[in-house]
Length: 169
Image (cartoon, rainbow, N blue to C red; front, side, top):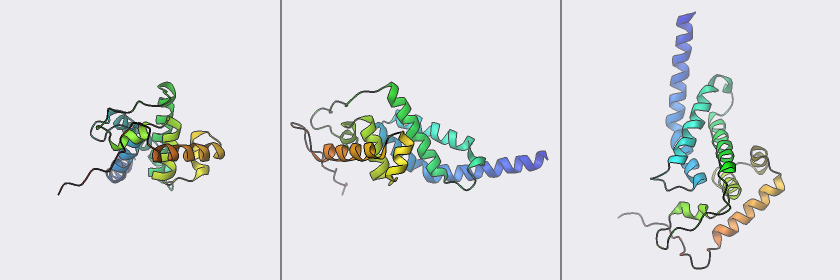
């Protein structure tokens, strides 16, 4: 019996390791978008990733037919939303002129706007699922998404337009 349990634990660990290796980068990118931190300095995003992966590993046996990526993503989003509730601030200040990074565009959004935009547009999660996950109505999700997209597409007065960085040649 003990040998069978250790074999199952080893198989579980190997399956999870393969999942984490495959999905870890995408989940870290998601967390970085949510926190609006620069990709090279993202301690909050890394903490969210570790929490989501640990929670997913703990529930690995119960996931059986479910999508482990969706489970980890949902945990990451719910944890970010919960943390943001305690650390709430309406809008982040713009970085100094000439230092705007890609995350700075999302940093201009409120926490709920950022959550909705990332879930709907980056992750492709349906409006109904996003609403259920965040505890909002579908109408509110639709309104937040529309307002956030308008904010992102309309640069603030006096702020430089963030252009994509050129690839090194």
